Image 1 (cartoon, rainbow, N blue to C red):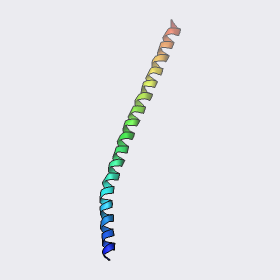
Image 2 (image 1 turned 30 degrees about the vertical axis):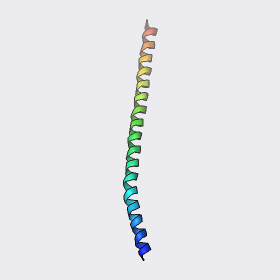
Image 3 (image 1 turned 60 degrees about the horizontal axis):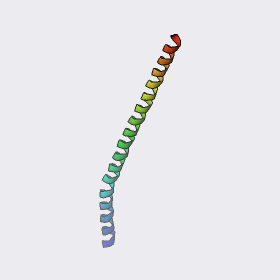
Image 4 (image 1 turned 135 degrees about the vertical axis):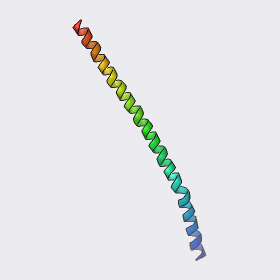
Amino acid sequence: MIFLTFSNIITYFGLLISEPLMLLLFGAAMILLTFAARRLSHISRRTVESDIHQSLIERRTTVN
């Protein structure tokens, strides 16, 4: 009976420690994913802008 209570206390403290740790790791993963998504969208936006710029230059040179 004493062992069972001791085991329950250890389990309770294990959950008490591991739960915030899991939330912290999950939060860190979300922050990293957000930064990665921003970076990727920035790169793709720059590519689209340079494609538009390039097509405008080509149009200008063919007109002249």
